[in-house]
Length: 384
Ligand code: SAH
Ligand code: SF4
Image (cartoon, rainbow, N blue to C red; front, top):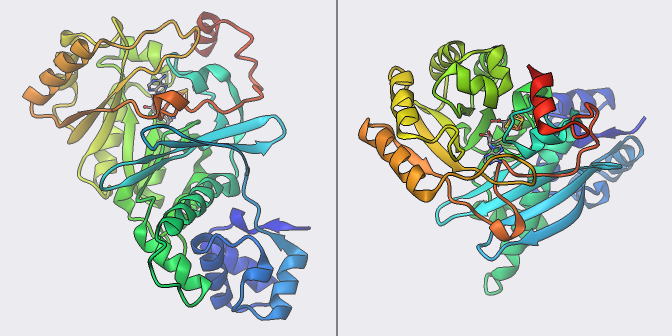
């Protein structure tokens, strides 16, 4: 049976090498070829013996998801649609900024958690992404952006060999940050996400710092605890409401893990977190959760939790039933938080001309929950 080496973390790759009778250092070589050089063809792995290359070609592949489309918006934001199997697609987006480049990736095809303002949630759920499909997103983007920045540098001396070329491209680090803010709930696909995280952090693979890899969760409390033990990266929590009554409506998983439990889990997470704060995401929905009194309630709610706020202007989609808060409402809301000493940023709406904002990565979902056939209201009732 052919195995996809993109499905393996460092340990899995070591196990695979042992199985085919190869020494452990081969696993590190393979990691570097696959993830740092973006090499998918064993024949191109020049420092592996020919016999080994042939053995690999007979038993394994390096198979990322297929790229279906690739668009660049006028502000430099770039969005790819990847096909993960017949009928299912996921989107990822790269957001370049002056001092960093952030890749926003997906963890599932669709999402079962049915937050009422989320287009992924409305599309229903199909399946978890495999490790190859999760890390494959970074693999593609790294390759595409490496090539792009490489081609701009026409005056640099020609590198001696390919490895060196890749390393010098890597030093430019087009992608400095990765956020799980595309499609899906990462903590609902725990094992695969953690293996992908391990690869992101591995110096032989992508070598990103823990502080620059962010998992965003709607609040799966037990999985937050497991993440803290297994791989504590930066954590963003989708709060969206200052009390249970409102959060129950917007984020249905709140009925299972209410705010008090969620905040307790945040406190526990902070003991191991690479940053000394939790980022709370708060989608700004006109007339729903965006009043000054909501902001005041929020200040009280988080007074014992070291945190920062990221206010996200709602990204509208057809039949959502919600509207984006006015810039004035967002400003007033932010002022209340800031005056209480809470660092608050307002997410810029980027790449609007290609609908590339995080939290609005639509993809293509063959819904297994048949949620889309029901109206939004019915879906909300069913999730209760
Ligand atoms: N499932 C995870 C991560 C993916 S969504 C989570 O919920 O945290 C990433 C962020 O985008 C979350 O904060 C989510 O609530 C937000 N989001 C979803 N739909 C949105 C929309 N239409 N407009 C703005 N933000 C949205
Ligand atoms: Fe799922 Fe996150 Fe969307 Fe909620 S906001 S439905 S958890 S992807």
